[in-house]
Image (cartoon, rainbow, N blue to C red; front, side, top):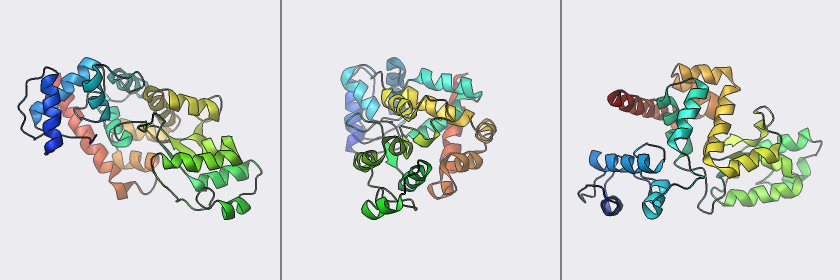
Length: 268
Protein backbone atom coordinates (compact mmCIF):
# COMPACT_ATOMS: atom_id res chain seq x y z
CA UNK A 1 0.00 0.00 0.00
CA UNK A 2 1.40 3.39 -1.02
CA UNK A 3 2.26 5.94 1.68
CA UNK A 4 0.36 9.22 1.40
CA UNK A 5 1.19 12.70 2.62
CA UNK A 6 -0.54 16.08 2.82
CA UNK A 7 -0.96 17.38 -0.74
CA UNK A 8 -1.14 14.00 -2.48
CA UNK A 9 -3.85 13.34 -5.08
CA UNK A 10 -5.17 10.22 -6.75
CA UNK A 11 -7.46 7.23 -6.63
CA UNK A 12 -5.58 5.73 -3.67
CA UNK A 13 -6.29 8.86 -1.64
CA UNK A 14 -9.98 8.45 -2.43
CA UNK A 15 -9.84 4.85 -1.18
CA UNK A 16 -8.15 6.03 2.01
CA UNK A 17 -10.86 8.65 2.53
CA UNK A 18 -13.54 6.02 1.98
CA UNK A 19 -11.96 3.76 4.59
CA UNK A 20 -11.71 6.64 7.05
CA UNK A 21 -15.38 7.49 6.50
CA UNK A 22 -16.26 3.83 7.10
CA UNK A 23 -14.27 4.04 10.35
CA UNK A 24 -16.43 6.95 11.52
CA UNK A 25 -14.46 10.02 10.43
CA UNK A 26 -16.33 12.89 8.74
CA UNK A 27 -14.75 13.46 5.34
CA UNK A 28 -15.56 14.05 1.70
CA UNK A 29 -14.12 11.72 -0.92
CA UNK A 30 -12.17 14.32 -2.89
CA UNK A 31 -9.15 12.21 -3.93
CA UNK A 32 -7.05 15.03 -2.42
CA UNK A 33 -5.06 14.55 0.79
CA UNK A 34 -6.16 17.82 2.34
CA UNK A 35 -5.93 19.13 5.91
CA UNK A 36 -9.19 17.42 6.86
CA UNK A 37 -7.86 14.05 5.69
CA UNK A 38 -4.61 14.59 7.58
CA UNK A 39 -6.59 15.48 10.72
CA UNK A 40 -8.64 12.29 10.38
CA UNK A 41 -5.48 10.22 9.97
CA UNK A 42 -3.94 11.87 13.03
CA UNK A 43 -7.11 11.24 15.04
CA UNK A 44 -6.95 7.56 14.09
CA UNK A 45 -3.27 7.40 15.00
CA UNK A 46 -3.87 9.03 18.38
CA UNK A 47 -6.80 6.74 19.10
CA UNK A 48 -4.80 3.59 18.36
CA UNK A 49 -1.47 4.73 19.83
CA UNK A 50 0.47 5.00 16.58
CA UNK A 51 3.04 7.72 15.98
CA UNK A 52 1.01 10.90 15.48
CA UNK A 53 2.48 12.16 12.19
CA UNK A 54 -0.56 12.49 9.92
CA UNK A 55 1.11 10.30 7.29
CA UNK A 56 -0.93 7.38 5.98
CA UNK A 57 1.53 4.53 5.66
CA UNK A 58 1.35 0.73 6.07
CA UNK A 59 0.78 0.92 9.83
CA UNK A 60 -2.10 3.37 9.45
CA UNK A 61 -3.73 1.13 6.85
CA UNK A 62 -3.21 -1.84 9.17
CA UNK A 63 -5.09 -0.22 12.05
CA UNK A 64 -7.87 0.80 9.66
CA UNK A 65 -8.24 -2.89 8.84
CA UNK A 66 -7.84 -4.33 12.35
CA UNK A 67 -8.80 -1.49 14.68
CA UNK A 68 -5.65 -1.85 16.79
CA UNK A 69 -1.91 -1.23 16.69
CA UNK A 70 0.49 -4.13 16.22
CA UNK A 71 2.61 -4.23 19.43
CA UNK A 72 5.74 -4.42 17.27
CA UNK A 73 4.98 -1.03 15.74
CA UNK A 74 6.30 2.23 17.13
CA UNK A 75 3.99 4.11 19.50
CA UNK A 76 3.87 7.85 20.10
CA UNK A 77 4.85 7.16 23.72
CA UNK A 78 8.12 5.66 22.44
CA UNK A 79 9.04 8.94 20.73
CA UNK A 80 8.21 10.91 23.87
CA UNK A 81 10.44 8.63 25.95
CA UNK A 82 13.29 8.96 23.44
CA UNK A 83 13.06 12.77 23.50
CA UNK A 84 13.23 12.71 27.31
CA UNK A 85 16.32 10.48 27.31
CA UNK A 86 18.08 12.63 24.70
CA UNK A 87 17.01 15.89 26.32
CA UNK A 88 15.71 17.34 23.07
CA UNK A 89 12.35 18.73 21.93
CA UNK A 90 9.89 16.06 20.86
CA UNK A 91 9.79 17.69 17.41
CA UNK A 92 13.45 16.68 16.91
CA UNK A 93 12.71 13.01 17.47
CA UNK A 94 9.57 13.19 15.33
CA UNK A 95 11.65 14.71 12.52
CA UNK A 96 14.32 12.01 12.72
CA UNK A 97 11.68 9.30 12.83
CA UNK A 98 9.94 10.66 9.73
CA UNK A 99 13.12 11.09 7.67
CA UNK A 100 15.20 8.12 8.80
CA UNK A 101 12.62 5.39 9.36
CA UNK A 102 10.73 5.69 6.05
CA UNK A 103 7.58 4.56 7.83
CA UNK A 104 8.49 1.08 9.05
CA UNK A 105 11.33 -0.97 10.48
CA UNK A 106 10.09 -4.22 8.96
CA UNK A 107 9.67 -5.88 5.60
CA UNK A 108 6.24 -7.14 4.64
CA UNK A 109 7.28 -10.63 5.74
CA UNK A 110 7.93 -9.37 9.29
CA UNK A 111 11.73 -9.41 9.26
CA UNK A 112 13.63 -6.22 10.18
CA UNK A 113 14.76 -4.09 7.27
CA UNK A 114 18.48 -4.53 6.67
CA UNK A 115 21.19 -3.34 4.32
CA UNK A 116 24.22 -5.60 4.10
CA UNK A 117 27.57 -3.81 3.75
CA UNK A 118 30.14 -5.98 2.01
CA UNK A 119 33.04 -3.60 2.79
CA UNK A 120 32.22 -3.81 6.49
CA UNK A 121 32.15 -7.62 6.23
CA UNK A 122 35.66 -7.50 4.74
CA UNK A 123 36.81 -5.45 7.73
CA UNK A 124 35.04 -7.61 10.33
CA UNK A 125 36.49 -10.81 8.85
CA UNK A 126 40.00 -9.37 9.04
CA UNK A 127 39.37 -8.44 12.68
CA UNK A 128 38.64 -12.12 13.33
CA UNK A 129 41.81 -13.29 11.62
CA UNK A 130 40.01 -14.51 8.48
CA UNK A 131 41.59 -13.61 5.14
CA UNK A 132 38.77 -12.00 3.10
CA UNK A 133 40.61 -11.96 -0.24
CA UNK A 134 39.83 -15.51 -1.43
CA UNK A 135 36.25 -15.12 -0.20
CA UNK A 136 35.91 -11.89 -2.19
CA UNK A 137 36.90 -13.74 -5.34
CA UNK A 138 34.16 -16.29 -4.71
CA UNK A 139 31.46 -13.97 -3.30
CA UNK A 140 32.08 -10.46 -4.72
CA UNK A 141 28.62 -9.20 -3.75
CA UNK A 142 29.18 -10.24 -0.13
CA UNK A 143 32.88 -9.59 0.52
CA UNK A 144 34.67 -6.59 -0.94
CA UNK A 145 36.93 -3.69 0.00
CA UNK A 146 34.45 -1.26 -1.56
CA UNK A 147 30.81 -0.67 -0.73
CA UNK A 148 28.05 -1.81 -3.08
CA UNK A 149 26.43 -4.98 -4.28
CA UNK A 150 23.11 -3.92 -2.82
CA UNK A 151 20.00 -5.80 -3.91
CA UNK A 152 17.46 -4.16 -1.60
CA UNK A 153 14.48 -5.41 0.36
CA UNK A 154 14.24 -9.12 1.17
CA UNK A 155 17.14 -9.86 -1.21
CA UNK A 156 19.50 -8.36 1.35
CA UNK A 157 18.75 -11.40 3.53
CA UNK A 158 20.11 -13.63 0.74
CA UNK A 159 23.40 -11.77 0.96
CA UNK A 160 23.30 -11.97 4.76
CA UNK A 161 22.67 -15.74 4.61
CA UNK A 162 25.76 -16.24 2.46
CA UNK A 163 27.80 -14.18 4.92
CA UNK A 164 26.43 -16.18 7.86
CA UNK A 165 27.85 -19.37 6.33
CA UNK A 166 31.29 -17.74 6.51
CA UNK A 167 31.03 -16.15 9.98
CA UNK A 168 27.63 -15.49 11.62
CA UNK A 169 28.73 -12.82 14.10
CA UNK A 170 30.69 -10.89 11.47
CA UNK A 171 27.67 -11.15 9.17
CA UNK A 172 25.33 -9.61 11.77
CA UNK A 173 27.86 -6.88 12.46
CA UNK A 174 28.05 -6.03 8.76
CA UNK A 175 24.38 -5.11 8.27
CA UNK A 176 22.45 -2.04 9.30
CA UNK A 177 19.21 -2.93 11.04
CA UNK A 178 15.67 -1.70 11.50
CA UNK A 179 13.92 1.61 11.07
CA UNK A 180 16.99 3.65 11.95
CA UNK A 181 19.56 1.42 10.19
CA UNK A 182 21.98 1.09 13.09
CA UNK A 183 25.05 -0.94 12.11
CA UNK A 184 25.46 -4.23 13.93
CA UNK A 185 29.19 -3.64 14.44
CA UNK A 186 28.26 -1.03 17.08
CA UNK A 187 26.69 -3.61 19.44
CA UNK A 188 29.40 -3.51 22.11
CA UNK A 189 29.78 0.28 22.10
CA UNK A 190 26.01 0.62 22.50
CA UNK A 191 25.82 -1.70 25.49
CA UNK A 192 24.37 -4.89 23.99
CA UNK A 193 25.52 -8.25 25.35
CA UNK A 194 26.48 -9.61 21.93
CA UNK A 195 25.79 -9.27 18.21
CA UNK A 196 23.07 -11.89 18.68
CA UNK A 197 21.50 -9.81 21.46
CA UNK A 198 21.52 -6.72 19.23
CA UNK A 199 19.85 -8.57 16.34
CA UNK A 200 17.21 -10.12 18.59
CA UNK A 201 16.30 -6.64 19.86
CA UNK A 202 16.02 -5.36 16.30
CA UNK A 203 13.71 -8.28 15.53
CA UNK A 204 11.58 -7.67 18.62
CA UNK A 205 9.97 -4.29 17.99
CA UNK A 206 10.34 -0.83 16.47
CA UNK A 207 10.56 0.49 20.05
CA UNK A 208 13.76 -1.58 20.42
CA UNK A 209 14.97 -0.22 17.08
CA UNK A 210 14.36 3.32 18.34
CA UNK A 211 16.24 2.43 21.52
CA UNK A 212 19.18 1.40 19.33
CA UNK A 213 19.08 4.82 17.68
CA UNK A 214 18.96 6.56 21.07
CA UNK A 215 21.93 4.54 22.31
CA UNK A 216 23.85 5.42 19.15
CA UNK A 217 23.24 9.15 19.59
CA UNK A 218 23.98 9.10 23.34
CA UNK A 219 27.31 7.37 22.63
CA UNK A 220 28.40 10.31 20.42
CA UNK A 221 28.53 13.69 22.15
CA UNK A 222 28.77 15.43 18.79
CA UNK A 223 25.48 13.91 17.63
CA UNK A 224 23.79 14.86 20.90
CA UNK A 225 25.00 18.46 20.60
CA UNK A 226 23.94 18.69 16.95
CA UNK A 227 20.46 17.36 17.73
CA UNK A 228 20.03 19.68 20.72
CA UNK A 229 21.19 22.65 18.64
CA UNK A 230 19.11 21.62 15.62
CA UNK A 231 22.28 21.72 13.52
CA UNK A 232 20.82 19.44 10.89
CA UNK A 233 23.76 19.34 8.48
CA UNK A 234 26.11 18.36 11.31
CA UNK A 235 23.70 15.74 12.58
CA UNK A 236 23.03 14.31 9.11
CA UNK A 237 26.77 14.10 8.36
CA UNK A 238 27.47 12.37 11.67
CA UNK A 239 24.60 9.92 11.34
CA UNK A 240 24.40 9.31 7.58
CA UNK A 241 28.00 9.94 6.55
CA UNK A 242 29.64 12.43 4.18
CA UNK A 243 27.16 11.76 1.35
CA UNK A 244 24.23 13.08 3.41
CA UNK A 245 23.81 16.16 1.20
CA UNK A 246 23.24 14.01 -1.89
CA UNK A 247 20.02 12.73 -0.34
CA UNK A 248 19.13 16.11 1.21
CA UNK A 249 18.93 14.54 4.67
CA UNK A 250 19.68 17.86 6.37
CA UNK A 251 17.03 19.72 4.36
CA UNK A 252 14.42 17.01 5.00
CA UNK A 253 15.21 16.99 8.74
CA UNK A 254 14.96 20.78 8.97
CA UNK A 255 11.61 20.82 7.17
CA UNK A 256 10.19 18.00 9.25
CA UNK A 257 11.35 19.64 12.47
CA UNK A 258 9.71 22.95 11.55
CA UNK A 259 6.46 21.13 10.74
CA UNK A 260 6.33 19.32 14.08
CA UNK A 261 7.55 22.35 16.07
CA UNK A 262 4.76 24.46 14.56
CA UNK A 263 2.23 21.74 15.35
CA UNK A 264 3.36 21.57 18.99
CA UNK A 265 3.26 25.35 19.25
CA UNK A 266 -0.30 25.44 17.90
CA UNK A 267 -1.38 22.73 20.33
CA UNK A 268 0.12 24.49 23.37
